[in-house]
Length: 280
View (cartoon, rainbow, N blue to C red):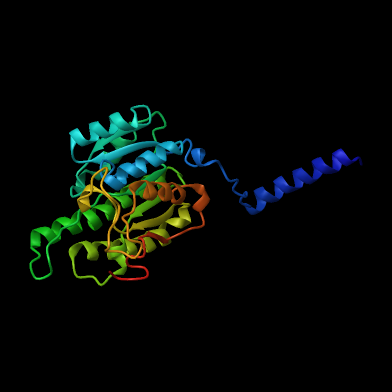
């Protein structure tokens, strides 16, 4: 038997072994601009500071995005900046759980691919009342958006992924607040997000659905009163600066890509040390 025949025989043997034992191929690293090539992502809170930055980064990585929010005018402005070829909008109220099934079905019509490969849960509200003065309305609003809405949209999208054999990624936007003593509704909601990230990862990995979270510290967004052109300097965290939303978007690309398929149930903190090395 010649060398060529031996090589062909070995290749056939390897292919047969792969079929019999379901051996997984080694992931080949792609260029950053192709990490999400061919994927479609649904991003809740996609017209906000962090959500929009994630949408921008996803598009740069080859992904089509559906940004979801509550304001038609904000969504329209974002689509104009992102480009209509790669970005579509979806109006959704994260407190209206009953609408989630129909909203996901609507999202599937936005691109020719008719699919959702990635869900990013970025919708969130803060609530700034001091303990002892927190109203029930504030508590309900923060928990309904940040935790209840996140839970049920994840359930709806993951059911879609399971039913359609999509080995997708779900990325929750948590916070450094998930590590701090918990006495505000916001901190309480982010503790819940951290726990749910672990639980959803445990439940969904059997279907090939990877769940993780990204946890920023203070980010230069409107939520913290920062606008474009303001200084990033702050004394409130060890690194002495706010994170730029672009930094969050870049890390989100990595976590939502196949390069992190073995990162499961983890929360990656981008906090400048806030909550990780110091509580201040």
